[in-house]
Image (cartoon, rainbow, N blue to C red; front, side, top):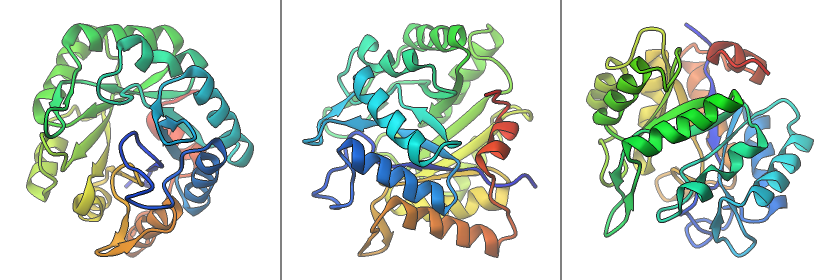
Length: 273
């Protein structure tokens, strides 16, 4: 079985210091949290950025500051900016970080209810436009899917040449409006992608560690971090993203999976840096 790639989603766009005081906002805090995850065993930093007051932004300038600060502390880590941004942002806003030529970036492959009146919009034409712009820059897309139909969309666009093979999927499970985070549903998702594709599972909230265990056992990869869950266990706030990564490393060790370095992750994912 391949070594386990751990992705750390260190801050997201929605979680706040009111949820957990360790959630990073400033450039220095974001770099610190990236380093804590990297030292614990994460080879990919899934990156959203904030202004100092916690407001989410897709500003290219803010991404540049944060990415440079992370590279100083974690020189070989894979930095994966989000092009999802936050609900309500325009396409041009969301795409700003790809101008910085990262190795990877996220590509959301469908529209999803996000609770209440929030709708995360990704039309087919938007997905094609985002994919074309990533392809033109040689950026590997991480195909983010919140339900089975989004896998089908990615497969259709792969056949049409917009999304290149081999594909890498991120199954985001347990979001209000998306697929539930259960072993049954993870098996369904993993069995719905091509044999040459790789995948990561991101369990949201209480689903985080059960889905991590499933991902480890099934030969997939795992995402954890404050974007998805701020608790180390029920009622116990994690003190850092590194603590969440450390727990996955312990689980993987018990279950016989080695942890991929950034160089090994690049090889598994077919990234040429």
